[in-house]
Length: 488
Image (cartoon, rainbow, N blue to C red; front, side, top):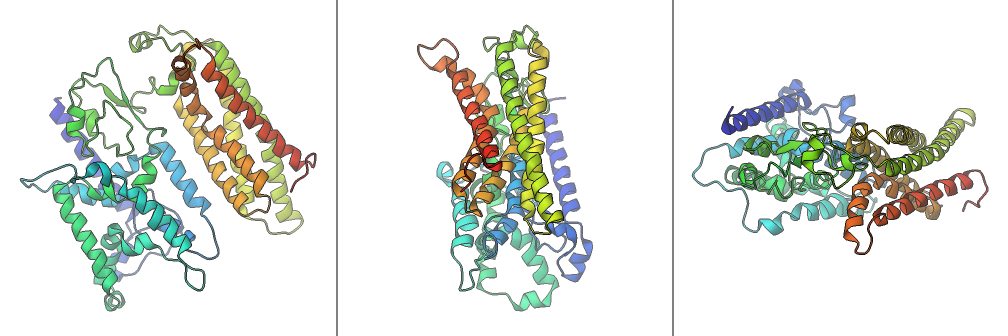
């Protein structure tokens, strides 16, 4: 199969998957005939893409809309569920969601397929315009809904109301056509959003996904996870000839051979199918050669030697890492069990209402610590077996990150709603550090080579200090729980 055939096959596969996903998540046919929004139980569940809640056929909710619905409320401060949802999908997929599971992304892709003489990838000023989506995320999605409130303390979902073209296309226009009440309510805001939608639609004919590149706050969030997500792109530098075929095929205009996990990458896969040397692969397609696969393998081993299985394990690093994880896991497990018992005791024995976040927090902690324990035991048992140490890669690390970042979010919310902000904030910070400790492993190895005058051990010393502080933080929290240390 030629490179061109591979590209066409990959493009067709992605388009059909996008269409199928749209049909599944927007399959409430009665909504398209009655002009009424589906109001079933699944509407409480977010879907990963920019899928408007108000779409007549939508079974789920948009995470951006759901986030604003909580931020602009006078009764709530933050949504654990939405932040946890975005974290899980971000850590697992990154912007793969944008390339494969976003309905408005499909719309832009189809518009770009319209044949015209003028075709460009980027708008003028692309270098600076690509940061506008972060401004919209911070200002219109977070700050304005939560800070600009009326006399009752209620804000507005400003991004949804005044900017989002996906909401108008998938929700506003169908409802206006089908429902007379909506037609009577048409005003200046509808006209304004129609102008934005037309500008994006026309721009999508000539430029590749302008909304995704410059305006989408959801893409901005997922993009921040690209470099740490389980699904990532990898470059085999022994094969890569830097011909630029990947950048030419990339609609986002990314030099994949230089920055394969750019926050702009939507993981469409065009670069993989376009590479004439098959030097680009994904972590799912090439599971053996990942960045943290070589945490416990001699860093001087080249890629060719790695393929030839000429590996030198570093059992000392694996042993220390395993012990640290087991210690942290055991201590955290004790705290998690205590938390679950206390939460259920207050609800079932004393009849007192406690937030479900208390139970969820403890259960989340239990799951996190079980994974940490399993990872630590695996590292110690296989510290002399290089092949098995290769299995200890970012798939495990990212599972840990997913769980603990969710724990961090719940810890932050607990701190925000607690009088004891000091110790809880410190405890949350400890978990935040621990969440990123797997990422510090390759950083520590590379740091050894960067610090002049240090032949070895500098980076790992820093990592061990951080992990030791994390364990001390856990012990401090347990001491407060048992009354050994005064609890403010």
